[in-house]
Amino acid sequence: MTHQSKARVAWRSGAVLGLALCCLTSASADGLAAQSTSSPSPSTAAVRKVVDDYVGLYRKDTLAEWRALFLPSFTSTSTNQDGSITVRSLDEFYDSQARGFARAKEMSETLENVIIERSGRLATAWADFVFHQDGTSRRGRLALTLVESEGGWRIASLMFSY
Image (tube, rainbow, N blue to C red; front, side, top):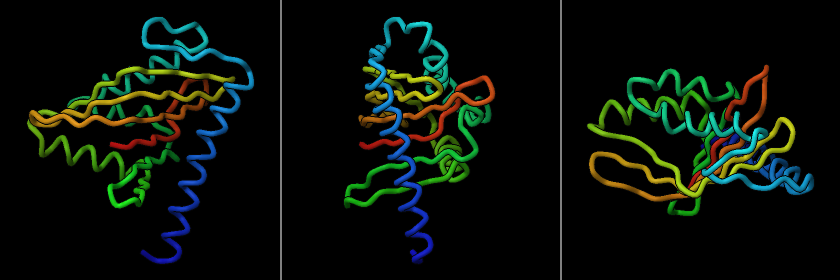
């Protein structure tokens, strides 16, 4: 990896983590209560719909619709077993999912223990997830940051770890 690539990864990672921290700090400062999967308040219902679509549209036949949930500047950050991280742009992340669906007979994701916090036009969704592929399952934890943009909510970033 070149110095410029390392700097880009470091900048993206810092930006993603900073946005997540900003969402959490703002939500806590405003005294907003976390919302569970049971009954979202009107203030989090639109965010909850995007989170539901993140899982519901995650299918081979609706992958193009799924992509529309993300901002063009979206980044995905994941941890690796060796202690490093992987940061992907929207194109890199989407292409990886498309390749997975092309290879797999079955692939899906479910979310559990979802907590949504919203402050103004920023929101964070935390969840345990189960990734299913061809009869095997892997459990992990994720955080989605969302931004209200042009009248709708879109996913700005995803951070996850198995």
